[in-house]
Length: 538
Image 1 (cartoon, rainbow, N blue to C red):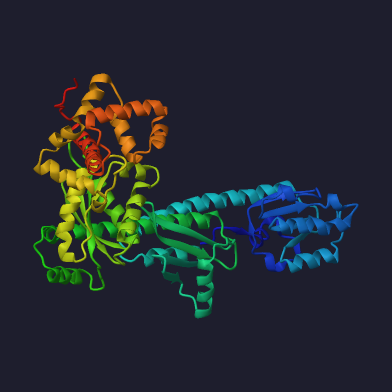
Image 2 (cartoon, one colour):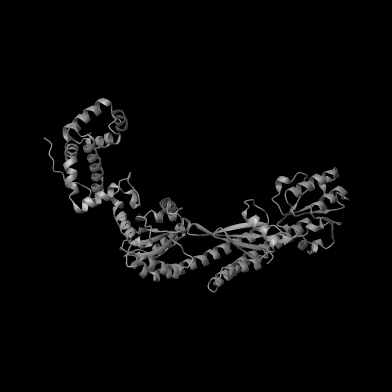
């Protein structure tokens, strides 16, 4: 469908019936957006491009040579053409003006008699405005046809072919950063030129591109080119509508894929529970996707925040399943998803080298947490735990158990020890075992009880002084700076600590035990809030 008005269409209007095109006949297909009546010589700052200029030549009456400068301004500002009324103020057109117009394919149209410029502008402007209304109606019709197609088609290529036939332009779709489809299919020479244009970041008047985004990630990119004209606003609006329809089609495919994955969740659950050998797992994966090659993997558990009624919204779980799959695949993982109550369990099969799996998964999780606007707000409610990496797919159940342990520890971690990876928890894993199988609070009291009781009774700062002093490896100067106290005050506090803990509290064995107990104290306090004290200060 033709979405623009050209100079040759205007020549068919009644006021142009007796005109003569004396130069730039090859430019009669130029787009026309507006009409201006101009009698001034300097007009370059008054034009936006694609205007048809009407003039009687009043500005050139005494200086005909300035017509060349005037014409050059119009060409530089990409005006559509120039109409001159002969006989009123100007009687001939200089040859150098005609030569310049012909060389730049810029139409010069002559009126050989007096014409009503006001009526011409009214007529052409009415035509332009009517065209705009028609285009809006056409755009609505196009959108409705696209929506109808989405209910019927199975192949995204039908959407792109429809746009190509509608705009009569060259269309290309780049999927996954490498696969490119052209509509219509160009010959080999033209295809190379188009591929070069795809890789170029330079903006051209006859080309446009539009990303196809789903959940904040770019899945594809649509391109259109035209060699015979500039693209206009209507072309860009159609391109935008097509990109949205393309995104909806891809999103539907993703939902279908997720539904299929839900049906396969039973065998995934058995996999997590350790009921399958490596051979059985590989056979099942090969049945699903013969091209899939996994190099170990890890389990990532995502805890969703329930609503006021204690229910997890289906829309949220589906959204996060799609989001995790989209992001993790970009970082080299193939996801298998199982949903259990308020938790999404992802088996992240590794498709790349094992050495950098943690860096890649960390990057994926960071991408999820750092989304824009609403996406970041929704992701901020997630709690994530990643288990130990499994070199063999048959060891995934152990990764699952360690992922559950990591998730359970998340609320107990201090700001310094915060991590969603099992292998980063170190001492916290030991504390969890001690708390589960021993009396961790009693051990904390044995080592830190006198300091805790002193702070409680005298509202003191002995615990934070001890923690800072140990963190500074016994450096009094560094400790006093971090605590913002003078050296003499620190000496007094250290003497008090020696009375409470013993003069040997900085010996290597005692110091190591105290550092561990300080971490354990934060761990228990984050878990339970308080520690019952059993020591009394005399």
